[in-house]
Structures are given as structure tokens and as C-alpha cells.
Image (tube, rainbow, N blue to C red; front, side):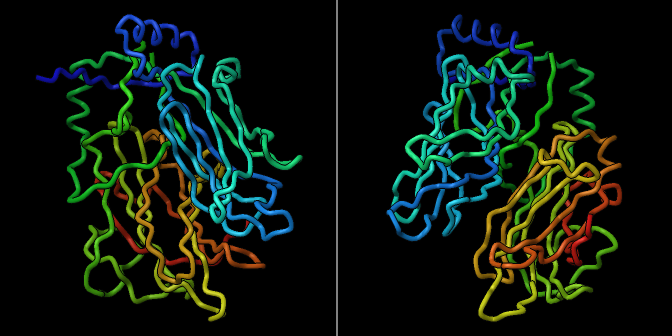
Length: 373
């Protein structure tokens, strides 16, 4: 017989709450229980050395490790100044003792290009338990090699849920969609009062099992959907290049009232223009919440190389209240890594107040020329 204790936890930036969380792990004699969450945003790395003296530029990728958990980034090809713009999340057992290890590797030769070890206890002394856009020097690397990153530590807390809150959550819950995929790492979290740790495992405790995601499924070619409104998803292909001839992008939107999160799935792009047959674009998608357009709201997909019809099926989330949602817009920009000119291939601004976010719905959006700031 297996006995489980499942607890919904909130997050706080008050380091005094860490004492209560650590005290509980010691009382239970479970050193594998997490007391906090570490969020790391890697912006870029500068001035990496070549893997071979006088050789070609490296193909850098990164490995980030806390405890026994390791995450890796994508590969950025042929550069000594790679831009990653990726977020990673770790469950941390004890931030007073744990360390974040970063290793930059040349994917081509598997040679180490630089290392960094950061003691998480330093975050406990930082304002709001976070560091913002810090250039940190790499060891075993070039003399000017640095990684530009941001870090945020949140303490896990327990808050009792009243019966009235449970009833409200049931009323506000959304009917599940036919299929689901797991959410990506979140870079912003909600806070609240009291403390309790969680056991580290393969399932992210912050993600609700009742929050389904819609994923792309192939179907027959149909006429493109109108852009004036949303519809339930019935087709995953389009033959149109859009009004501006810049292609179209397929997105799914939904809002989780229980988790206070806007959930966006970037499915695919269709019919990007091919101006030069010898230079097929390497497209990727970048998101910002408007009007602030701050780096905290930036999200970015993987790059699909040499493709005018890339498929992503990547999920992104924003922690945002329902009231605030209706005053926001989402900026969706399609860019290419393969260009000497402007990398922007097309853009669409989505008014979130125009969407029915009570259910998962999908729409094709026409890409338009970039709106100059």
C-alpha cells in the first residue's frame, strides 16, 4: 500500500519562510524534499574560445545542473557569441547548500568551452531573492568569456484552501480538451502565506493535471479560417499566404482560472515567402506581452532550420490575473536566424480581450509587416 500526501503550494520571496520549510524536511528526515524553486533565464554568452586554436567557430550549447537534475539548451551554430534566450526551472532541496553548475560545450567536438558554479546561498542575500541581467565570468574559458543571465529563487509555501474556494474553482474549471502536452518552464510565479516542501520527482508540482493543452494533429487540407474570430480547432493546414503574403501562424489560446495563467500553444507557420531559393529561412517565434514588452514576458521557440512551413507545437504560459488580461495584447513575431538584414519575417498583434479564453480554441493569423516601435 502506498500513502501519498498531495499539497498545493504557493511561492514567496520571503527568505524567513525557508527556515520553516527546512525545519519540516529535517523533522521528516527527508533530504530529497524540495523547499524552493530556482528559475534561470540564460540570455547569451559572449566571447567564447574556439574548440581548436585557429579552427572554425564552435557550435555552443549549455548544460545546467542543480543536484541530480540537468537541463540542456538548444545548439546555436557557428558562433562564439551564442544567444539562447531560454528559461529553466529547478526544484531545490536546500538553497543554503545547493549550487547551480553551468557548462558550455561545443556540440561538434564535445569540448568544454567554459564553466560556472554559482552558490545559491548568494541569492538568499539578494534583493527579492533574484539577480537581473548579471554578466558572470566563465572559468576554463577565454579571458573575456561571460554568460549573461537572470535568476530568481522562490520559497515553497502551503496555504490552506477553504471549502468556498474549492467550490469556486470547480465552477470556474474548464472542460478538458481531447489531447494534452506538458507545460514549459514558467518564469513568473504567484505568492502567498505558510510553508511546506515537496518531494522532487518527474512531475512538476506546479502544473495542474486538469489543465490540458491542445496539440497539433494532421488533417485534410481545408480552406483557411477567417481571422475575425476564433473557432474550435478542426484543421491543421492552410493553403493561404495571408493578406500581406507573409504567411500565416496557427496559435491556441486558453486561460486557466484555477492557476491564473494564460496558456499559448504555437503550433506551426505556413507559407513563409521564399525570396531567395539558395537561402531558405531558419524561422523561430518570439512572444511579448504588451504594452510593457519587458524581457520578463519574452518567450521564444526553438529554431527550425531550412523550412518555410515549420511545426513547433510548443507551449508557453504567463502568470496574469483575469482582470489584467483584458487590457493586454500579445505580440507574436516570426524571425529567421539566416539573414544579414532585418531578421523579422512577419508579425501579428493579438488583442487578448477579443478572445474567448474560457476554452481551448485555435486560429490561423495572417502575418503582417513589423510594426515599428
